[in-house]
Length: 569
Ligand code: NAD
Image 1 (cartoon, rainbow, N blue to C red):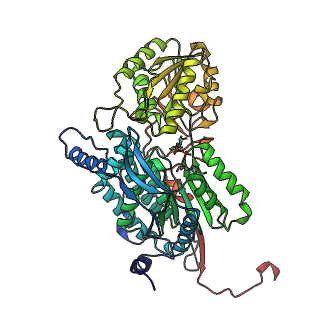
Image 2 (image 1 turned 180 degrees about the vertical axis):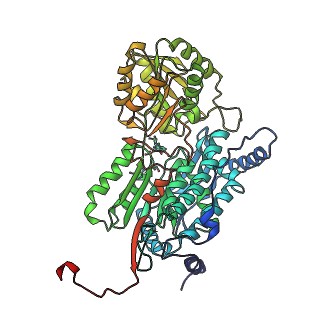
Image 3 (image 1 turned 60 degrees about the vertical axis):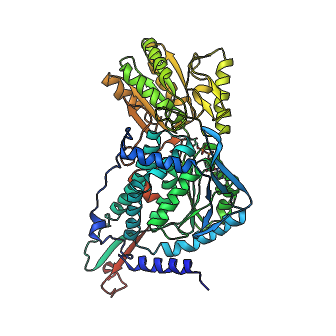
């Protein structure tokens, strides 16, 4: 006998399938066809403001308990014996969530449910899906904004502004703008020379099988995008959130469910990384992996897909947005104030744990004394503390593993004769995983500190002789395996133009007289090539297409009366 929950799911699917147009793929509802979108405003949280009061309330509530977060497959909750906790990085004795690792059998069950659900979900017209997404975006912008921000601040140690641009603005933009991009896609219809005789059309299907969405800790919004963009396009997903972004990601799941995403479309499956990876890549139903995280993890997943390639029903689509070693390259004509402020923000906001954070900088010797004193004076003013202290510029790094890795690079700087720590260098994990914003000057632009991804508040600068700028451009381009973000600073227009061309492949997101971080959905679609990923440009119109399988339909209205061709006569 069907449970009440499953019955209502089937009723839900039927209701949605019967609304709107599903065969043509063309959107008929004028409200959906015509809607326009804007980026979600970033709120200011000034003392006394309503948003600040609401956020303070949410922070109090989230920090006062340890929330229980189940595994959710097909709308059913599961709890296993493998209990884990998410702690506050800035106060690691405080647990904000208790969750459970899925067993291999549960991962397999989720695959089964997602694969079955995909057939029904695919029949729900795109316009019905868009309505759910628009409703969810509004709920995130209002009722749930505070909880999304509070769980991101406390769980991932983001300051107010960093949480707001991520868990509110960027997440809402992903949900709203992807719905907009999907709707715009349907406007392209192939040529029909005489529609009375033959009509050609194109519609978008989900990927048959299931998609695995594997998300990182550092952006709440990325989790929502990875799991729900394939779903928007008709696919179903297994979402494996990061252990250290668990609670904020669970809130996204809850909001999307409340907005109307039926059970089984997105399955929330916290798990040990390799257990999850091994099981999804072993399934013949794997239709795609939507991954954001480090290069070694993506390499492992890609290798496993390669090994199993003969067993799949489809060629799985692999999207991986990975690491970076992002640069600021300064020319002797640059505006020093912009360089200093842009670099401080890019290198140290959210402790340099943005994939786009500036980690290596090249400065002409003529400007180095001014830039150096600007950086050091500003660095001294940065407050590193609890996110609940609203004047903090940054807080703790995410976990013990990150703390050890980053402090290892600081120790390397302390020991190396080529490197000098000119600001910061202290770290302390007794209460939280705190690392002071650290600035290093190097004599060797190829030291590992200048070429490996560190993912922490550590900036290294090489001061180059002004007349060697061309060699430096070539070094910037070739000394790391990455090509995610990069910025050049100059007032000399000719140099800017030429350098933009020389560095064409050095970054997927390239900035001129602006810092290397801060891309906005719909404004700077994001992603890099080389070892930084498959460059599918999340936050842009091309991305949604990656999660759809288009179908061309030719429909003929007149009978075919002849098999011979005229020339044969
Ligand atoms: P990570 O690779 O450690 O983890 C990413 C996700 O993969 C997590 O959910 C993790 O549990 C999971 N995982 C680990 N091993 C797995 C396996 N064998 N199979 C399946 N899943 C597995 O990365 P992280 O520390 O969470 O994130 C930081 C990295 O992400 C940095 O390298 C950063 O540059 C990158 N990043 C890139 C972008 C981008 O758009 N290019 C955006 C954000 C973060």
